Structures are given as C-alpha cells and as structure tokens.
Image (cartoon, rainbow, N blue to C red; front, top):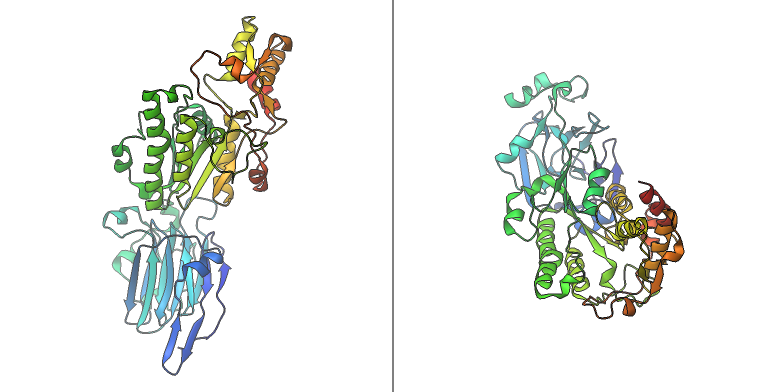
Amino acid sequence: MTLEFAKKLTATETPIPGVVLYDLPVHGDNRGWFKENWQREKMLALGLPDFTPVQNNISFNEKAGTTRGIHAEPWDKFISVATGKIFGVWVDLREGDSFGAVFTTEMDPSQAIFIPRGVGNAFQTLEDNTAYTYLVNDHWSADAQGRYTFLNLADESAAIAWPIPLDQAELSEKDKAHPRLAEVAPMPPKKTLVLGADGQLGKALRAAYDGDASVEFAARADFDLTADASHAVRDWKNYATIINAAAYTAVDTAETPEGRRAAWAINATAVAKLATTATAHGITLVHVSSDYVFDGTAASHGEDEAFTPLGVYGQSKAAGDAVAATVPRHYIVRTSWVIGEGGNFVRTMASLAGRGIAPSVVNDQIGRLSFTEDIAAGIVHLLGSGAEYGVYNLSNDGDPQSWADVAADVYEISGHSRDAVTGVSTEEYFKGKEAAPRPLNSVLDLARIKSTGFTPASAQARLAEYLAK
C-alpha cells in the first residue's frame, strides 16, 4: 500500500446528512508513518460535532474480502483505517427523507469518516491484515444490541458494487440473514423531554410539537425536578434534548422562608441536577430564564449583561442560569412578562374590564410582553436551525410599554375606555404591602435571536389575537 503524505486536513460532505469524510495529514520517512487520527480542536474547527467519544474499538481482519455489516448503531462513530485498505459502505437507516441513501468509498490510513447514530455501517477489506478502528460516544453493552438496525449486504435497492462479490467474500451467517430495506424499521431519532409541561409555556410547547412522536412531555407529577429518583430512572442515552420549562415563579412568596426554599430548590438546585445529567450524556439543555436576573437600571438588557438580581426569585433564577451555562450544549432563553394559557396579567385586566372595574396599574415598570406561543416557536427555531449555543433574549417585539399601557390596550381592544386605567408608581402601588423588589426596566435586546433568522411577532399584534380568542 502506498500512502499519500502531507495532505491537508480537509472535510468533504457526502450524500448522507451528517456523514463527513476527512482527509488526514500523514507524515512518513524511512521508518514508517505518523498521523493524528483524532484531533478534537482541529476537527471541531472543520465542523465535526463535539461527539465526546468514550470508547475506542479495533477490528482486525486477516484476509482481503472480509465483509462486515450493514449495522446502524445507537451512537455516533468516528472511523479510520489503522493499516490496510477497505471499501466502506454507509446507508442511512434513520427516519426521514434520506432513509436509504447510500455512500461508498475506498479508505486507507489517510482518511477517516464521521458516522452519526442510525447510519448503517459496513466495510470490505481490500488487503490482508487490515485493521479498522473507531471511536464511539457510548459504551458497548449487550442491551444496546437490541437498539441496532440492520440491512442486508445484498439489498437490491442499495445496489452496492462490492469490489469482491459477496459469494466470494467472507461473511458471517448473521449478516447474510439481515432484512432487505423494505423490511427495515427505521431508527427513530433521540427524544426530547419537555419538563413543566402543564405550565403556560409547557402548554405552548405541547402545541408547537403536536404530532411529533419524538417529544415527551412531563408535568411535575411525571418528573419531580427536586427528586434524585426522577433523574436516576430514565435511560438518558435515548434523549437528545431537555427543555426545562419548569420554574418557581411566585415572586412575592419567594421572599418568605418557605418560598425562599422552594424557589432555590426548583430554580437553582434542580437545574444543577439537569445540568449534570445533560453534560454526562451529551444532551442539549434548553433552560428558560427571566428578566428578573437584572436590576432594571439598563435601558436595554443584552445577553452579556452581568447578573444584578434584586429579590430571591431573581437570585434563584440567576443561579440557575449560571449552572445551565456550564452545559457544553445549552440554550438559555431569557424572557419577560410571560402571557399564555392560564392565569396572567392580561386575563386579569380583561376580567376587570368586563366587570366595569377601573384599576390602578403600575406605570414605571417598562418592558414587552412575551406570548408563550412565540417563546415556544423561538425554542423550536433554535433547536432546529443549529444556532450557536448560548444565551438568547426572547420576548415579543415592538415599542416597550408600561404595565399601565398594556392594561389600557386590553381595555380598548375589549371595547372599553382606556381612561378607566389609572397609572401609579411601583412605590405607590405596593405601599403598605409585602412585595418583592422588581426591575423597573425589563426591555430585552432582541438582536441576537433575530440574527439567527427568527423574528418575534409584535407584542401589540399578539395581544389583539390573544384577546380575540
């Protein structure tokens, strides 16, 4: 075998989504050759997913013509040749439009290939004493074999042009017995788990993912975030994403001894448990944050602003954000003034308007409403678009308003006079009452999420739609 030395490290896309072929630089002299078979920093720079391999396997094949596969395994693989030469075959056996797509190529030690979970892998040795090596991001176990998907090497629809005909090759009886493509049950995608599924945002996420069998929804009765048992009983290898829509949001009650304990348990300690789980299993964590992590003194809050929470609720949310940010694959979605299905400010004002009550409403707290259907749509967008991990502000768009402005809009849209709403300061409104401190300015800068291709709807337009329903 003659190797081509000193090639550049390059990546080439293939017809199968996510399958990428790499040319590896090989350096040789009179003693032999050397290559960097797996170099995380350089390969991430070329776009290889940070798939966190945990096991290295080697298949030694004594004779040319040895043929293995086609096996789709429930983990990602990075494959290369240590010595010799192979004819490699990959068939997409995942659910989706690319099911059945085929890619073949010859590989020697100067090449490697990344194979995502669910893509069938096979090879045929073209030289004696060929060693085939691969990194995987899960530990092999006997139980895992039950999650494999197989395809017959001689499948007519794949029409693989084996260099050495299969009737002359060395095959196992198991590989000969695998099903044709028409009989293959495609490997389903890893699952998404939505926590807090019965809250306002949880209900909107149920609607956004309606009909998607890969998404599971868990209310508190199904998954108690504060209980270690909830985190221990699930097989996290089957999950790709956790969306944490659960939170303790009783801002004023959080200032009491009991409320303080509950706020910290749900908003911080439970998030630490989720972060540990997500990091250990390579899961993407979506965590929903709040404008209350800021003191409201900035004219507009960007994603990089330092935490300055005023009360216990904001402090516990800031702690949860800090922990969620340690997960390598994380989206922290920071929102404000949430309106969805269930009790909320808009429903309260509409009820007061209908009963002819003229309320006093705070007029020195400024922000934008965030309707849960748009928060849910933003989360779906971030996950589906492959946006860079990190923090994203996500409220509705439009001119900032005070709570009194919003209340007046509710009255007007409901057919009542705006003048029924009287504006008062926060200090005046809460005079003589036990209440948590609140940020006076909750306006979130939306430039970053807009740069990903997601444009939130106008808060005023959504308010009219919401009241019409």
